[in-house]
Image 1 (cartoon, rainbow, N blue to C red):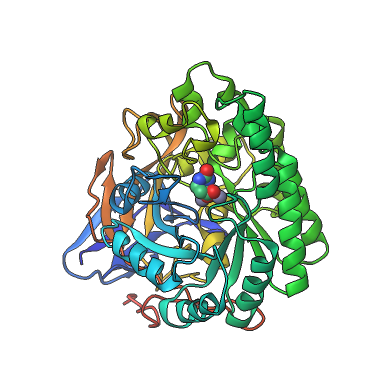
Image 2: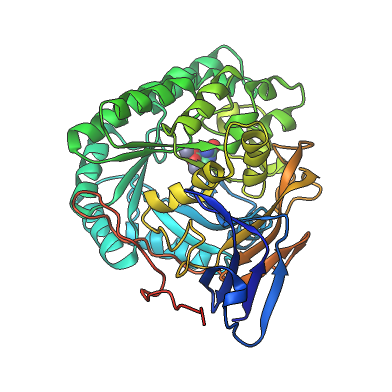
Length: 482
Ligand SMILES: NC(=O)NCCC(=O)O
Ligand SMILES: [Zn+2]
Ligand SMILES: [Zn+2]
């Protein structure tokens, strides 16, 4: 491990920002303050952060690397996906273990743990509940108590595949309450989607233009409301992933207004891409945007921004789930067989800075909250992750608010051949990324190391879903002042 002194920057945390130096020793943040007061360890590299913001590395709570889905597997595996994340300032991903129906959860978990060993950045897993019997209930206990899983995902969409019904939702939510684990949902009414898909096909509408028509916003709003109701009755909090429309944003705000613990996630893509992409005459272009929930009419984007600005929506993610043109072509004659998923893990933070901070919607601290700190808090790894503070992991991004770049598949680090942000010029870019105190991205040079990423255990919540203060090595920060 090398030691790094980050000098002359402005440290930005979710609560405040200040000019301060940051010392990283053995992969942890050792001190934040005035370096002239410190006895620096021997062999300390110095990074000049003058004019830069020093922020907690981004945390993306929703990715699918190496994901076998809809008859194929994503082109980004855990190495290429996390390397791309590091190039964009994201230093931790929370991915998903998604058992096939009837597949033992522990078997699927071991499978994904094996795939993730090549990760270049730290990673953790939500585990999906795609079926139910007593063994699932048991395995959930083992995952929480022995494997550091503290969140379980429920797909309310994808009928005849990984969709879970209301009975499974209730059984699993009750188990989450027993274990102190956060239930999360993909909220679309899978029965409605399936029926609308069949109707599109019967009418001979087989192209990607049918994708959003088969999953209108009401279908998401109904499922969000239903999941929130189940959570209320079962007495658990709930986290709604990829909130894409005003209907689900409003369902969350209503529940929160009643004092219910409901949290919402927004994808960077849903904030800037709209449903016109599905009407593009080129199949490959339109199909490249097929993901669920679909990109919506522009009018929904204001509801998502208002949710993030008002604190009714909490985190941002990407749902990075990349399929290249030849894989998407599987649905050439039937839109329901186009593998669902798009990329974004590298572009998320720059897109949010450019559209959020530069527009005045967000302060730098609010940017940190929605790209890192809130996810760390909601999944109980704060302040080990999500804060520039002594004792935390030295996962940092040094941000140049004046820098700019053009987002493109020609220069991105994902293995995908398409970029949903193609051609977008952003102002505000990551200049350095440090992962475990090692500079892995510097001025356009990526030094991601296959296998350097660690599996991050996330402790269960307390009986009242209180979160514990989590440090990586459970040691008090070592003071370095003379
Ligand atoms: N989102 C998407 O279209 N694909 C990944 C699986 C999911 O999150 O629904
Ligand atoms: Zn989903
Ligand atoms: Zn997903």
